[in-house]
Length: 284
Image 1 (cartoon, rainbow, N blue to C red):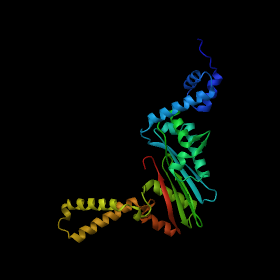
Image 2: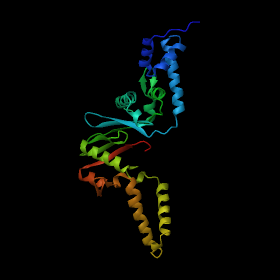
Image 3: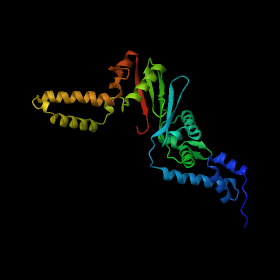
Image 4: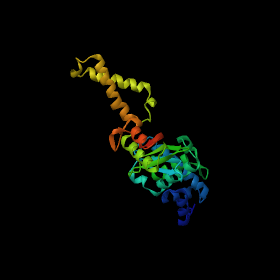
């Protein structure tokens, strides 16, 4: 039986539609006996299988994209992760990230689950579209996170994306805030990497573990042996304030441009406060 002829035009059309390599497109068309839709389905399944194989591989790179409304009252930031820096600069990866940001802003998406399930057209979700991209490029990729903030009355939503394009922050400020202050707060967040806004958000068991560690640490310090118990406990509490809450709690961190002042004090002087924030970085 004579092999079916597949034209270069057919292969090119399938490649443009699927984004898959030329040889895979030609093979899919041969197997489908020239049927375009069957070949597309074959490539889609191939992409899904490749995505499954890539799951679990470390994603230490990625891109952030942000959309801030014209009035500065709402903002959305999305994070898409990949394995290597060259991949995050490929046109198809960038295109996916930018489209996700557009869709997320338009549809007011505010959770990872909503982002994964959102309609990306052609019967595909954002998640299935990304899995197909994994099959094309051959690296593990994930929608790492999404945040959406809105303020009413006085205040702004602002953002900052570091020059490596994979670290950034989104913040909502209330009061007499402006875009420049919001950007500065976001730069501080990227620099200082806080975990929570206020100390009451830190789980009580984490605080107790830290106290236990500090007490054990001091008990092993010979210079502390003869100090009164009350003085030792005071030292423990002081270290808890400075090295635990002062490192993890955004409002209690030293301002990145003036460490002697706490973040909350700097913003108080500017007539505003932080309503919410989100720090983005691979692994954060």
